[in-house]
Amino acid sequence: MIGYIVLGFVVGIALWYLVFYFRYQNRDVVNELRSNLKEANSEIHNLSQDLEEYIQQNTILKDKVSELLDKNDDLSGVVSELSKYYVHIKRAAEKTSELTKFLQNPNPDMEEKIRWFVDSSKDNLDIEKKFF
Image 1: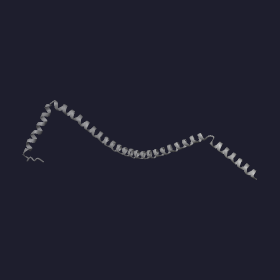
Image 2: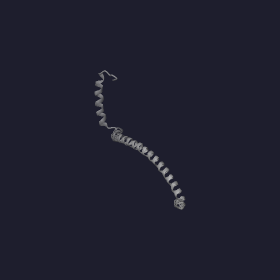
Image 3: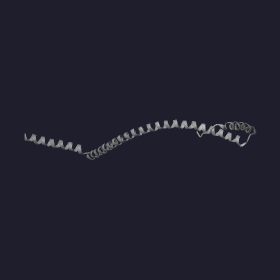
Image 4: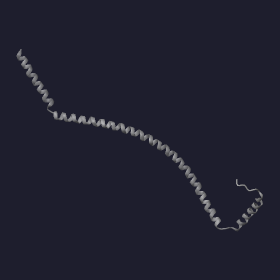
C-alpha cells in the first residue's frame, strides 16, 4: 500500500512536470503574445475614443455645412437680384452715353423746340412758386 502511495506520488510529480514543461516551454512566446494583447487592447481603447471624438466633430461639421448651404442659397438669390440691377444700370449707362453724344452736338431744330417750352413756361410764371 505504501508502494502505491509512493508510485502515485511519483506519477503525480511526473505528470505535473510534463504539464509544467509543455506549458512553460514556450513561455517567451506566451509572454510576448500577452504583451501584444495588452498593447492591442490599449490601442483599441484609444481608437474608440478617437472614433467618438470624430463622430462628434462630424456631427458639428454636418450642421455647419447645412447652415452654409442655406446661406449659399440666400446669397445666390441676392446675387441674382444684383445681376438684374446690374443689367438695368448697364442699359441706363448706355442710354446716358447716347444722350451725351446727342447733347455734345447741338441741333438747331432742338433749339426751336426748346424755345416753345421756354415760352410756355413764361406764361406759367404767374403761378405762385412753392418749395414743396
